[in-house]
Length: 338
Image 1 (tube, rainbow, N blue to C red):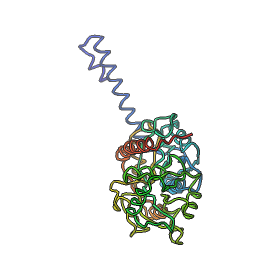
Image 2: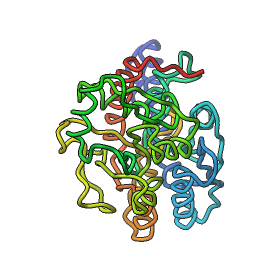
Image 3: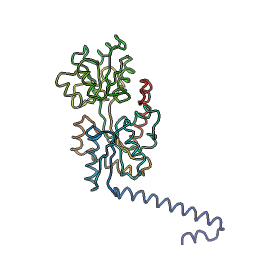
């Protein structure tokens, strides 16, 4: 009816243009309507949260907390799918190649921003193929030393390192990991030449630090606190931007003479890149609400994490900055994944 009235008085070519434009507009309205409907009716089937690491680790624990909340809120089952391997790349690729309907999500720590410069060939583009939903948490490392170390502060450590270039050693749980690059960041900002010593995991690195075979290590605080309390390790500083409630009197590296030093582990929630924007916003709002619930806050705080809950836009900008930051440190370190 509308098209007939519009086409009156115009030639056949013009009428075809009008009909074509109207059809395009109608398709656009239908697409927008379907996107909104998809977000409103979501989820329509069980959800899956992919964790690119083994069960029982910090990423897995965070995923299970969120899975329970999504299930309670939607009435749908939510499965945590552990897919370890290749520094998290295997799990990430599963999500990248998944149907972009919001039913398959990814929880990934800082390594997702390190991998693009660590691996020569990636099966996907991290910034283009993953849609950031929200940064869930951030957690600093804790700079520890043997209980018998001849220094008690960051400034004393820096002075000792400068007096013995290359002689002091910094342990890490593996080449190209977050605490390896934290050692490189320390050298860069402090102007020191502390030698990196990689271990196959956190446990042997911790053991050798306690034994005095290395002078410093920056592990997850929960990993080290028991040994600090037992007097087997000395806590020197936290590595994040601010102090942590579990040891409120312990300063940060930045406030101890190395301004700008900020290293640690954050957790992020992602979906496949083509997931509709409306659905990304829905997932963000739901997750942000979960993060404010007392039981969730308590669970994540027990791991030493500080809740963030940034918007998709904020998290996207943060991701770009992180990829650039770690790329510079990977280049300095010369680290390459096998």
